[in-house]
Length: 260
Length: 335
Image (cartoon, rainbow over all chains, first blue to last red; front, side):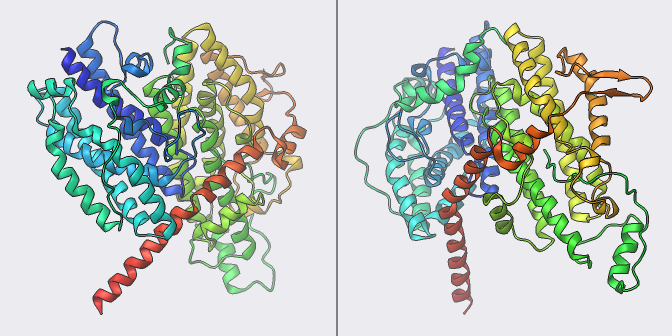
């Protein structure tokens, strides 16, 4: 019961946090078409988060609800990958003002959607029927996200000198965070054992192939990994998540008895 | 959403105008088509002034959609439930989509999007002044849907019959989406009005701040409208500012009663003789001052658009550079 729940929250928190981040481009995109594209990607993530939280709330029972799970949990209770909570900008502390860099956004969306098309594909045969149905819907959406991010990554990498430099910097900045994909948490291991979840480390070779092939086409290089492996999915986050959640949850928490 | 640039007065109803002696065959064909309530299409001949008026109006309308994304976008990150967040993202995204169709419609008249954006960014082109007011609490999002989009619909439904085909067709889709926006805004407010005292106070506060601004959206009184009757005659403008405003008020008062909010106008009352609601004086000095650039958010809105455009330059450059490289590669391969 709690295994399934932890696993669902990991998937839901990934979706809500990245949805929140991508929506930050709404009204500020580099070109109107991209403004709309990012809003749509964000909308898909919020939609995925809602379905997953609703399912988790049903598993938890009692007065649990999608909004209680999204708005009334503390940062350390969130189970998303650290990669997804980072601002759209190279390394900065949490309280530093964040300008938006489109290369960072595109590289993150690429790295994550490249993983999630594989995860959703496998989850279609999850022993949890509701999760399998959510996966089938999410796979279609995520295929578009991957297509969008991959096309742009190639354009940026093989575009101008500036776009190449920005794309390379974003790859160098974000790629180390993907190491978190390949360590399995207790919740993930239990979900795999129960036939509910996906063995994500087993996807690594396919993911590497897709990433390497795309980086090559984008004329970008893949840096060697060195450094810290993040642990957002077990609740140990970067400084950025509490800012993100503070903003997202503030109004709902100021009116805990309100319905919207 | 909409632009208030269509402030062309009523009065000069659509009568066939006297045809000047020197009118060319092309001009006569244009006039005849307008007189017969036909559509003008991009490839058709049209007078330079008709083209210019349309480019100005459609581009200002497009700019309004894009600038209008900002006040509502202000609340996306803080939407108090995931359902409302999803609705708001979809709604703001729709407004961006309207901007896209409208820029495309204006491009059929021979003016590029870059040139239109340059007009916006330099401050030369206007956009709807309603977006120069701040969104201060969550209920503003609902009130913008209900009142601002509601006023926009009143203005835009007649534009679906506009004489310029691409504009008229764009407006049909825009109106369908705006109508949905209005209903979602009203529904969000209904839920809040059934909620806590704080929620009810938010709704009333938002209505108080937006009511008069929405009435001003229809443009100056017919008697003071700066543009000529030409728009009416050309079939670009169909109903006068004052008539649209009255129609909006008459439709909105009963909705406010159902909602349980007070519209902030002590002079608002039913006039049996006129068959309409009477209403108080709109503060036109404040309106014109805001149109002139001195509203509470004019500088922020424009600076934000300019920043997004400038910051995005390298992305657009990259896309172009890549497209050129791809073309060159295709030519080399073919050779």
